[in-house]
Structure formats: C-alpha cells, structure tokens
Amino acid sequence: MGRPGWSWLAIPVLALLLAACSDNPPPLRERADGAATVVLATEDGLRLDARLWVTSPSRVAIYLHEYREDQTSWWTYARQPRNPAISALTIDFRGHGESQGEADDIAGMLLDVDAAISYVREAGYQHITLVGAGMGGALAIVAAAGHPEISVAGLSVPSEFNVVTALTVAPLLESRLALAASRDDLSAAYSLEEFQQAVDLGPGHVALYPGRAHGVDMLKGRAGADVRAYLDGVLATFGRQARSASR
Image 1 (cartoon, one colour):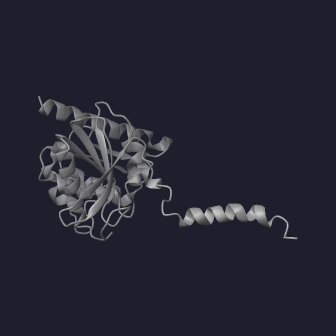
Image 2 (cartoon, rainbow, N blue to C red; image 1 turned 30 degrees about the horizontal axis):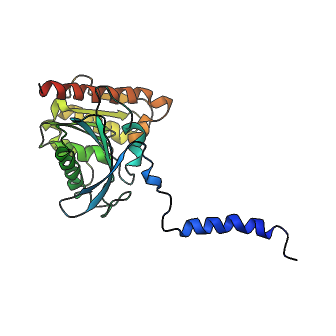
C-alpha cells in the first residue's frame, strides 16, 4: 500500500510547480484597472513600460516615481477621477520595474521624461503636468524648465539628486511649480526651504506637513488625507490654468 495522504498532498504541490514553470504566468503588473499598456521609446533606444488612464482628451498628468521604486507606487492615486478631468500616465524609469536600461543612469532618466512628454503630445494632449515623488520630482523640474506650457507638482523633492540639480532651474518654473514635504523628513524639508528661497511659488503651491512620510507614502492612509487634498487642489488649479490659457 502507498503512504497514506501522499496522493492528495502531491496534487496541489504539482499544480504549484506547473504554475511556476508556465510560459504564461499571471500578468500581475497588468492589473492597473482601466489602464492601457503603453511602451515608450527613448531617444537612446530603450523601451519603457507605462500605463495610461484616459479621462480627458486634452489634459494629462505624468506620474514619476522615486529611486528604486516603480510606477505601481502611483497607481492608486493616479487612477482616481479628477475635476477638471485629467488623464494619467505612469512610467517605469530605465532600470526600474519592467523598463530596459540601468537603474543608476540618472542622467539618462531625463530622456525617459522626454519620451513620456513626446508620447502624450503625439497622442493629442495639449496641457501637461508632471507629478513627481523624490527623484521623480527633481527630474520633473529639470525636464519642465524648457517647456513653459508644462507644470510640475512634487512630493519630497530633493534640491539635488545625483547629477540632477533641480534647484538651479526651478526659478524658471515660478507659478507652475507646487511642492510639499513632511516636516520630520529632514532632507526633504530642508530642500523645500531651499526651493522657497529660490522660487516665487504661487499661492497655495507650497506645503509642509507633520510626520516623516516620504514621497508617495505622504498620500497613504488617514494621515495622508490632507496631502491628497492638497495635491488634488494643485492638479485642479493647473487644470483650470490650462483651460484658461487655451481660450
């Protein structure tokens, strides 16, 4: 006689092994409800993974993640409806998530932002807001400096990140830049102070919150309700500015 219980135990184990060896594993990163999968091509020949939620034909927010994170960190917030409506594009920077390239190629990530901007322009979007957390915010500021029609909202943005010196070009943005940080996230709070000294930010375009949450974590849970409301308001303000400019 065989060992009791062996057969019923082997079946689920075998099933797990087959699933692990399958050529078509569950597409976990495809579970961005309502989004289309987009592949961006950079100027230096890389392919970047991205997702697009379409709710407006003319306005779009491009969400840029932190160093060693990926676009999924923004999905919960990015796919929420806005008023006025604004479409959302999230991307994986090179070497992050499912994108090609090297994760430490910080300078090259400016080409990633350029690729996202080029894509939404070709898709017909006229008004663009870059929304960045940490490193993504610094890259957003530098990328937008030469584009007077692009606005930037940032969480925990460093004044300098590797070769990206956002503080140097931030004065070029003025009223189209909005920043927030946590008081006990000391480096981000100090950078926010530097930005305030260098840039004439518009009314309601700078905020310092209690706690030590950094980047997208500032938006999480009950403690993040005020930050979510702030960022919602910034996106709405930039959206109204874009609508007025188009008239």
